[in-house]
Amino acid sequence: MNQSKKCEKTNEIISQLSYKRAQELYGERLPDIVQTRLDQELTSITKNDFSDLYLLSYNLVKRANEDGEPVYTHGLVGASLVANMLGITEINPLPPHWRCPKCHYSKFITDGSCEVGLYLQDNNCPKCGEPLIKDGHNIPSVVLLGRDGNKFPDIKIEVSERYHPVILNNYGMTLLKKLEELTNVSYRQIPLDDSKTLSGFQYGGEFDDSDVSKDVFKLFKPKKFADIVKLFGFCHGAGVWKDNMELLIRDGKCGLDDAISVREDILAYLEQKGVDLELSVKVMEYVRKGKGIKKEVAELLKSKGVPEWFIESCNKIRYLCSRAHALSSAMMAYRLAYYKVHYPEVYRLGY
Image (cartoon, rainbow, N blue to C red):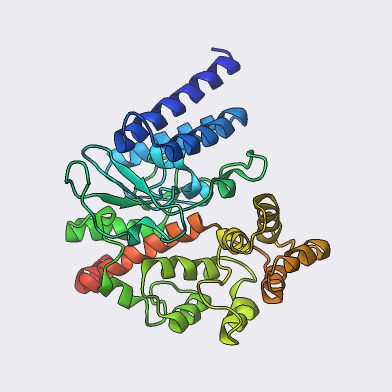
């Protein structure tokens, strides 16, 4: 088979697998928001010859899952609906929504009234009465694809040290695997709104060894999972927290909700100020790479009501991680914390 036909075949496999899973979750006639996102991503994957990478990742994760191994997938891949449909990442980047596992009814919240699906109210399906599943982490496609739709997909896959195919080893996954076996509690079934687990993060970020995270967690004492994601964004960036957001928050110039923690925060804040999407994306791309905001752009932003503190903060940032990366890191830390607070003796054995 020549290279061109091989690419066509891989593109076809990726597309078929993605739509098959999407229809299993959302019904044969996909909601417009799902259809549009899948089409957008698949067009980028096909046009830029990324399908081999997605198919390789799909096969690696599938093999690890079949072997009973927990998989830690991080990087920008969490912003990809295709990757979610392929099982490469458990993060669904769509807006917060309910979906029915029985009749496939779905309802999406796109007015900004809810951060993530986790915080939607528990509801039963209005059509068949089945308890609805809550999902969606609200990650815009432009973060994944870039302005021109050709950004290279950042996919990092790690497994426990006891598993040795072609994937990186991760000690956290090794510990998760041990704790799963010792407690007979699957890490994927751990609820992300457990109050006892959340309380464990309110005493200095004891589940992360970095000094930055200890300072951040002590200061904010996260009360919900979204707070933990926000704080991991501070910890994983460069020039984001120390001498930047810590000073602005301390001096009352901004609160945690408005603080810049991940790339998406820039988009969301500029959108609130009425800045058009193209310029907002351009600013996000420059800031995340540590290039700051040019003087003429800064003046334009000020004319839209963007405050000086926001621009100064952006100019101090050397690197800004994606929400998808902060989210996957927060999920791992949270799950380890769950075992630690609910099964302390077992946790010590595993550790």
